Image (cartoon, rainbow, N blue to C red):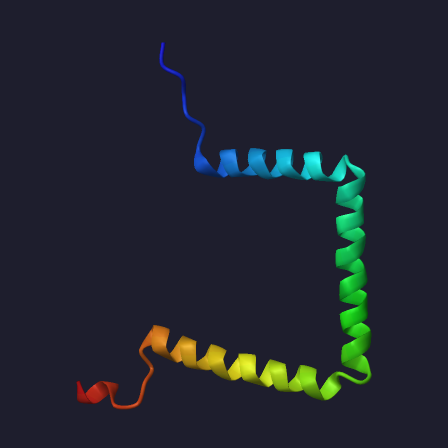
Length: 83
């Protein structure tokens, strides 16, 4: 008898659920979560004080490259009508 294969979204949901249950039922998972939250709090504090200039420069750099990639993806480049 053939076994039925579950749809991909169902398999992804089950796998992620299993992963999260296995990680957060151990002490290491909670330590990992605390490190992530602590890092985000530290990043926020740094961007509000001494790292403001570096953070703004980084955000500007990311936005300009994002606009360039978007323009390339949608074909909104100068000279396109000449082709």
